[in-house]
Image (cartoon, rainbow, N blue to C red; front, side, top):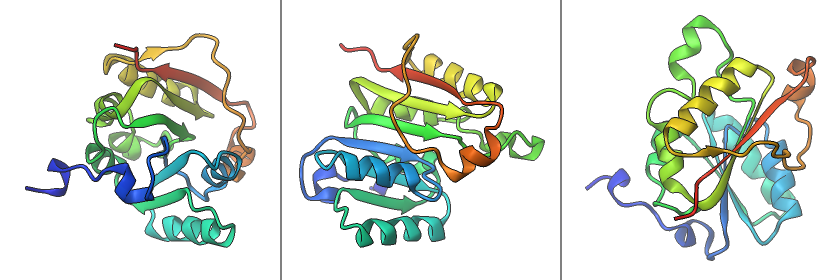
Length: 185
């Protein structure tokens, strides 16, 4: 039996049974920390590729006494595979790396098993929030999420979140946003 065969219950991760929202690629942590401070009744779990960035976010959470934040370093494809079915209230994917370089295409989040794993782990009625400065990246990930069984919510408004340093630097032409939901039933 491996880690992926036995998902760790969220209550073991956070010590309570509050709803869990997952941010894939929190970067410097601006969004996950703001959400955690504004919503103390929700737990926030980040999956960050860089171990150093994950450690820095956790240090900032500790300095702010935010007990509802956990961040792990790892590949989102693998980490999300270890999450229990229908146990995530929402996913947040803002400005996903990799950038549109040819050599990075194989790592894009819309490829591989991640969209199916997100759909499997999302609660019925739960949402996936996606924003990018590149319409093509959002389109590719969005198509993969729809192929996995999620429905695009037309006209959805993005949740209030801080403008990240990355967004200020690269989204000079604007931000593209989409929301996808897991149908109830």
